[in-house]
Amino acid sequence: MTKKICVLPGDGIGPEIMAEAVRVLEALDLGFEMETALLGGCAVDATGDPYPEATQKLAQEADAVLLGAVGGPKWDSLPREQRPERGLLGIRKQLNLFANLRPAILYPELANASSLKPEVVAGLDILIVRELTGDIYFGQPRGIEVRDGERFGFNTMHYSESEIRRIGRVAFEAARKRNKKVCSVDKMNVLECTQLWRDVMNELAPEYPDVELTHMLVDNAAMQLVRAPKQFDVLVTGNMFGDILSDEAAMLTGSIGMLPSASLDANNKGLYEPSHGSAPDIAGKGVANPLATILSAAMMLRYTFNMEAAAQKVEGAVKKVLAQGYRTGDIFEPGTTKVGTRQMGDAVLAALAL
Ligand code: IPM
Ligand code: MG
Image (tube, rainbow, N blue to C red; front, side):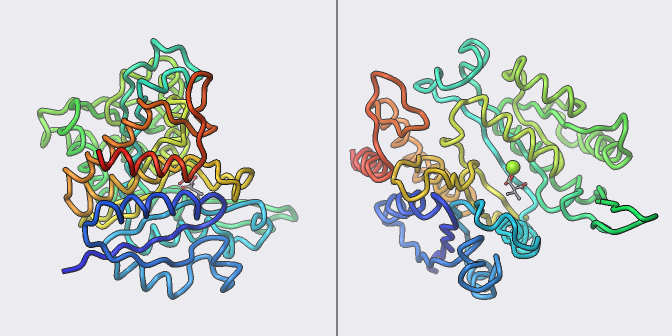
């Protein structure tokens, strides 16, 4: 059976970084069938819809989706349902990609890129497990309307226990393969919804006696992430807190251009994308860092296709190019070799061939 990948380059630097990830996948020669479609602003421009029918069909048929990035100032003033972000939320929801894995790893070669002291971040390796299809992101009712003669904005935070349980299991299972610690993040001192979150996590814990479960309030978690980030192994939280904390965790490494992510359904079908955005300011210049997208492709090999050896080969090649001193602008420091997007791709391909 051929394995089909839906490729969505998206907006901004998306097409440039995706081209390099596709070259890496082609070089591995694993027999993938890759088909490209539109998502985000480019899809709005072409069809008026950020997640058009044709893309929906392809994404649903494919075994995995590889995404560059979506969005940009050009589309920010469009009606909400036409914004690129709506396309991203649409594909997550439609494909039931409830488990978002966002690793934050500090590569030793890039220790100076972090804004924190090297001793605080050296060896950092955290996995954020963010629930991705529930919470206030999708809760109804929502809107802006006029009440009592003034505008009134509202959203609804909610989680069912089954939604909490299934993301909890992902976190516990992931911890089993790592350092066996799960920290669940909530705001139970104020929000009932997250009291339920904490209760359900506690109910799950006895099924994983080999994993240590702790809890932290989200404000404290935000603080602890910059104070002593190495205390964390797996951090599990809801959609909105996860959105915020995963950006914070990514920046601990100083190089968000290096971080991949996976969004998985219950059968490990997944959407894989770099943790960074579409960087419109440098789009089209050939200077963007393609490594997070290449590493996202490696996560795809691991989680959807069960090709651990191939995944490690790609990750090994990325480590090699860093050791060789190649750096795109975002991670450049004096004494290293500054390269563009294509040259970085070339270096990875060369390292793969070694
Ligand atoms: C992310 C992004 C998205 C989110 C936006 C673009 C809708 O910030 O993937 O973290 O909030 O989930
Ligand atoms: Mg975000």
